[in-house]
Each structure stands twice: as C-alpha cells, then as structure tokens.
Length: 213
Image 1 (tube, rainbow, N blue to C red):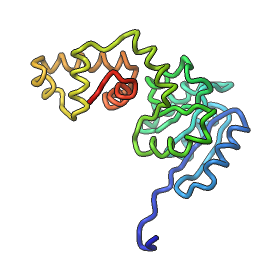
Image 2 (cartoon, one colour; image 1 turned 120 degrees about the vertical axis):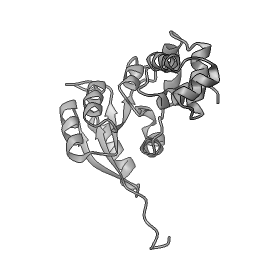
Image 3 (tube, one colour; image 1 turned 180 degrees about the vertical axis):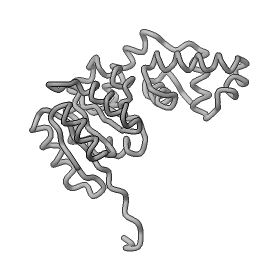
Image 4 (cartoon, rainbow, N blue to C red; image 1 turned 45 degrees about the vertical axis):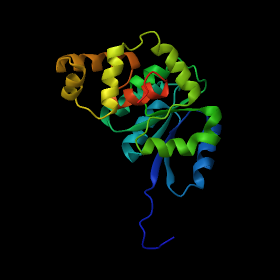
C-alpha cells in the first residue's frame, strides 16, 4: 500500500440489542475490520437514543424488539432528530410484521440475526454507501404487503421516470399528464410501498420485482 494514499474512512457503528450474546457476536465480527469501529453499545431504547446523540454513528444496528421501546420507536426518534441517520434493523424472523413499518419510518436496511456472521460487514458497508439493503427473505415478506395495493400501470411508468433521473415536469411531458398528476402518483407510490422518498421507492420496487429499468 502506498503510504501517501489516504486511508478509507472509518465507519463508526452503534449496536443496540438486549441480548448480550448477540452484542458480543457483533463486537467479535467487527473487531478485525480496519474500516469499522464499534463506538458504542446499548441494550434498551432509551440508552440507544442517548448513545446516538453522544456518538453520532455512521451506521446503527437496531433490534426490532426491546424491553422499554420498540426498535421502530427508537428509529423514529433518531430519524426525527437526525434525518440522515442510517439504521439497520435486526430481525429474528424474515416475515416480521414490522418490516414495512420500519421501512416507512426510514430504516436503511435489514439483517436477519441468524445471518449476522455472514452478512453483517457487507451490509454495514452497503448502507454506509447509501444503499437500501433488504435480504431476499425479507423482500418476500414485504412483497406480500405490497400486493395488497399494487402499483397501477401509470404509477409504474412514473416510477420508471424517477429511476431514469427525470424530474416531475419531464415525467409529465413524457407521459402526457400534468405535473400535479405526477406528484399525486408519487405520493400514492410512497404510501403503497411504505417508503420515505422516491429513491427508496425505486430501490424497493426493483428488489421486489415490480419495476424493471
């Protein structure tokens, strides 16, 4: 390695789970990673919020189920104060009913606890780089909810325009509809896919196979 080359930035991680064994596993998994540092741990929601405020981690690993507050409630508090926070939810089962709720609250990714050893480090790096990461097993669970309110043909066309980087006015011109109609379609898309913004809507639609670009 060239000593004059700048080193990769360190990804500061906060781990939140009420099971000490799982926290120990995360500590062990990250201990040998030169680009990651576990800056803090928490075992309940209140301390998780306090530790986030203190350390401002780049990525947070958040258990869905905790004694005092749910992981989703903690996610909402953190994202309200720090909208750019990247939080990966830790789920025990792929079909957890809270998956879509967590996505709506702004979760940046999901990890199944049984896959931590295999997927933890790559998921952290991917979320840190700005990607939405959802395991295939969780995608299937999300897809089951999405089919309750499938996107219309025109909504898919609008989402394709977003995926191509087109603005609302350009999409309207492409589809020969009013710009206000485009905005309404986008609002409906976010509700149906339970995502926070149009970028995450595109990523989720691609993952669950309702959009091909």
